[in-house]
Each structure stands twice: as C-alpha cells, then as structure tokens.
Length: 317
Image (cartoon, rainbow, N blue to C red; front, side):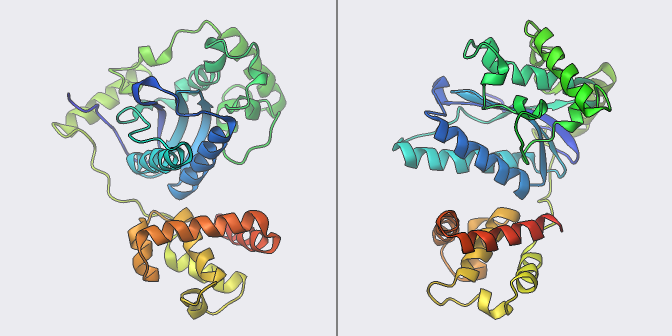
C-alpha cells in the first residue's frame, strides 16, 4: 500500500490524528491522558510547535498545530513514540500502540481554523460521552472559554478571527460551537485527505504536489532549534551560577549534570545517542538520568525551584 503523501514545511498548519492499533484504546485512565498531555507539551517546546486545539478520546486523539520549522514528522514521532513507550511499560503491553503512521492534513488556517477547532472540540459530544462540553476536561475547549488556565494551547489565534474583544470572542465561540453540533465532517471535504482549504489554497497545494513529483514527502532538513547545547550550558553557568566543568563532572550525585541532561533532552532536537556522546554515557542511561532528575524535582522543592528557574530562562531566549 502506498504511504499517504506528507507535505512538511515551515509555518504550516495541520490537523493531526492518530488511532490505537486495531482501534483499541490508547488511554486506559485519566492518568494516561495526563501523561500524554505532558508529552505533547514537551513536543511543542522541543520542536518549536504551536498547539491551537486538541481533544483526547479513548482510542484516538486530535490536535491542531502549527509547525514553525519543517519538522512535522520528527515532532509527531517523538510524541507518539515517547508516550507509547511509557504506556507499554506502565500497562505491560507488547506490540505497537498506534495504528500505522499518523494522519496529517494541511490546513488553510485563514479560512478553516474556526471550523476545525469546533470540529475537534465537539468530538466527545458527538460520541455521547458527555451532555455538555464544559464537562469534558480532555480537550482545549475549556481554555477557549477561559474556564481553565493553560500554557500549552493558544486559543487567541482562533478567537481573534471572531472578535478582537476577548470576552465577546469567547461568548461568540461558545455559541458557534453549540450551533455546529450537526456540522459536516470538514475532513471529508479535504482534498484527498491531504489538504483542507479554499479553492485557491488547494491549487497552491496541487502545485507543491506537482513540484514534489514521485517523492512521497517534501524533503526537510533537520531544523535548527533556538536552543542548542551551548545556549543551555551558558544559561546554566549564568543563572545558577556554576563553572562549566562542574556540569560535565561525572561525580556520582552531580545534580548539575543531571539538570543539563534533562534540559538538553527537553529543549533540543538531539537524540539520546547524541546527548550520550556529550556526556560519555549510553543512550539508555541518558533517558534514565533525565527521568530520575524529573522525579526528584517532584519531591524536592529546591531541585524543582532550580529546574523552573532554568526553564524560565530558556523560554526567554
């Protein structure tokens, strides 16, 4: 079977879906959904991606995102594989969690952002899981109505297309979603499940496809993140402050080294093997070191304070 065409380039908007293998559940509990959202947030930061809307269902998920770099496949692969690894380990499951490759549809955000966000948010209502959307915590709908604070989604992009006044926009959005409960599936209106948009937008996509020729995916060079190893190490030496050599000291219990590994894993596109080469350790040890540091931060106030201080400093870069 031919792989679906994947168009990947800078500043592109996508509707992403991924289903459980054989349509089985990918979330067994609220805890699973919490972990997935945590992995999603990590992906957004690590791959310089913006999330405008999401909805988690028991056997699949929807996200509406914008990739600032040409790195769609890398980002979603990180999201799905990191969550699947955690899920399999947690529930002692063997085999693939997700059904094949994720599905991506290029979106004409100027004309379809409002429609798509409503379609995504209406999923649990259409499935009969809840009677009103405000009762469902596993979508970004509550963020749109300012009923919950989130630093993961950006509702303003869609809301400003309705009204420049935020309060009016939220009320109009609630009304729009309520009136759209019987809306047609916009994905079915997409061009060969490749692109969703106006006639002009589709024509531009066709031109890209024609230029693409026989290749199944527009080649994308490995993107350059605004965060690199030198930036992170320099920020650590300035913010903590400590000498650079202390960060790389292999002395047992060196929390500065563990913090650096955690930050590099979270904020850069480097693989575990590449991080391992920097710190002269096995790739699996890199993963464990980052995980142990995060666990320590959850129970140790001082470690958490230092970690948050560095995260804030890096977000300001």
